[in-house]
Length: 337
Image (cartoon, rainbow, N blue to C red; front, side):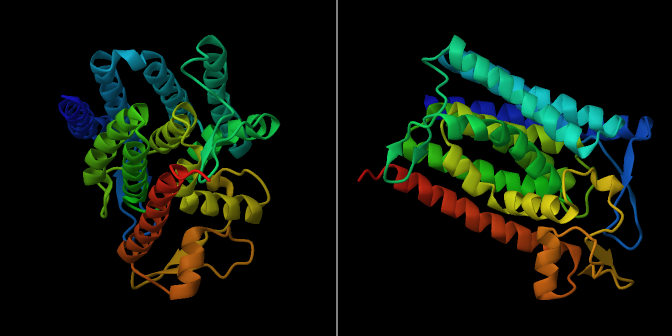
């Protein structure tokens, strides 16, 4: 019966996103909310705001799970609240560009419901007890509380920063959702099984529209929602280590971007791009010393110029490796010294 319930919420989130995305595309074109696909020589115009469909898919899947798994209503509503807060911040940013530091600060605010819930529902939301390999549950105080805002806000912005090529966000995040799902099965965590299935259904459905060549862009509403969702899963389900390992490519990219531009800056305000599109369509690493250092720029510095689709495949390969590492970590968490 549980498997049927899981399948049901997957189908709901999948088809809600699949049906909603074309409607969002029409809306974006109607209100002239579009973007330029800068990594193609022809610079095609692509409708944006596709992330709204992801958000609606997550919402529908979560509401369905409230009916089927009502015993987890606190965790589900909290998960949904964090996702919606980050989604609203992203939507505001899509219409009125926020400064980098403002976007980071506001996404960190989505941690407040998590902290409040730990006091209101201490039997359901436990903070400061992450599970790690060999040692099991740790009891952290100051360190955990210092890092807590970064788990949600950092995850949201890290996913946002790596959304640079067609299909990369839903593709890499689908691998992360699969890693969380398998890790949750290993660790027997029903709550995160539910949340990861909801995420996977919406992301796989949306990937159909966003894959190379993209029919729609996600906008910040999509990437911030998805990144915030992973942060929420990490905290609510005590999967901090597993989720952070799965997010390693995004974290590395964010670290290099922030350190190379010396702070949180909106990408639209950065003078030089990290990569350049050649006349033959290949993409090469920028030689400008002031250009941001990104994961893509590092890859191209090693491989030389590549077609966009091969860059995407390389990023997927890296994500698959870290997702496998996250699953291995889940196995090791079960090992006690």
